[in-house]
Amino acid sequence: MGKEKYIDSPKEISGKVSFIRMLIIYIIICGAGVAVLLISFNGLIKNQDRMLTEDICSLVTEKMNSSISYMTGSVENMAAGLSAQGHDDLRELYGILSQDNIGSGYVSMGFIDDEDNIYASGTELNEFEKWGLLDVAKLADPVSISPPYRSGKTGQPVFTMFANYTYGGGKHGYLFLTYPLKEIQNMAYTESLTDDAEIWLMEAASDNIIQCAGSNKYSIGSWNNALLEIRKNIDSGYQDDYSEWKSKMDSGISTANITYKIGSETYTQVYSKINFMYGWYVVVRIPSSSLSSAIQQFRVSVLLFLIIYFMATVIMFAVFHKRETEEKKVLANLSVHDPLTSALNRRAFDFTAEQYVEKSSKNEAALLFIDVDFFKQVNDKFGHEAGDRILVGFSAALKEIFGESSYISRYGGDEFVLLVRNGDKDKVSGMIELLREKAKSVKPCDNAEEYGDFTLTFSCGAAMFPNDADDLKGLESCADDALYTVKKNGRNGYGWYRK
Image 1 (cartoon, rainbow, N blue to C red):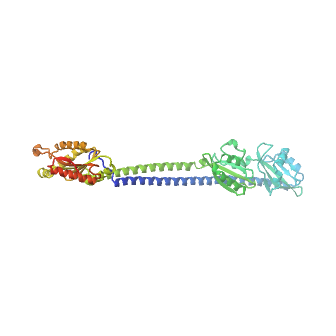
Image 2 (spheres, one colour):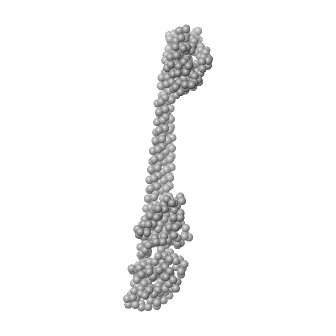
Image 3 (cartoon, rainbow, N blue to C red):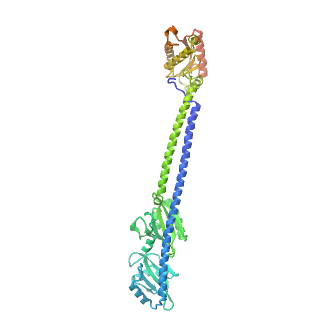
């Protein structure tokens, strides 16, 4: 109906609000679902890291304990074999064995007699005193192993194994063999490990660690202090967790795990007790990025899929809503417009005009009641099709002159009502005069011989808002009175309400 405006009905406004509310609820539900999924993935990754690291630590510990058990068995068997030979002079025996160099893989060997005399090189005698190795020897039952220490002979980390030995008709002493720590470090290595995995030997009492495997090949065999090194770099939120992990080791618990962050990297760390080496543990530390790269990539793929799916559903939701809204607007247009003239019907006009009047108390507006003069005679003389043509043509003239600033309605039959927004009397009167001229061009048919001297006229009653009335009902009453006066005075004219 031209360029006239129609204010959204409460039903349409409610529909828009409902759509926005549904969209917000959908976004919240999707966001909650993604959050739950992320939490589940993170928990899965954490559990996977812990289980994999525990499995690796168990594998390494099993290999080390198995190999150390084999080494202790070899030392025990060597001691038993020498005991069976019944040697009396340990000094002589030490000289023979050290000169023959019969050992395989060890750095040196020697004996301790029943009076705690040590048969070894001068360098080893100093190490016995420095590292308290004699006390370790007396723990042999039947074998004992010293903590790792740095050899004065080779300059490399070593450990010494002691086994009970009898000589000279029942005297009790000890056989000892010193091995390079590299023997244990080689045990720790396995091809199934990632290059980022770190394996340490750790002494619980001192927190000292010896690195056996790791990404930095040059640090293998180095000594360090785990407590100082880790606590210097670990995020503050994990300090208490590390202290609890360490306390489990100190209390003799055979294995425990911990997860912590250093910077942006998350690590899983597990320890496991080593048999025969009292107070020493295997510690495995692996970054999550190394263990869980596949599942993390899967998580990213799932998140990307969910984001794309979410965006696609929102777009589809919006498209369907837009289409549904447009369809509703078409139906609404059919329900609020007169099907013949496409002007507003009475119900739509009353709602729209009332909304405007209620919100525009300070702006002038004019309400016009218009009747086509002698419309019944047009129908009787030219037929109903001609009557419809007159109504359509007259409605088009109304839209052309008033459409920019008015709500135009066909109230019924030949009655029209207009609300001219922001218009004073002079301006509206000028527009009515234009309409009177324009109406003359509206004809019941195209054949001039048929309509002859026919001229379309109308009667119009007008009232001003808010001067004449401050609500729509009052305005209609005033305009109707003005229209009645015009008709009473012979039609074909217009008049303003007078109080």
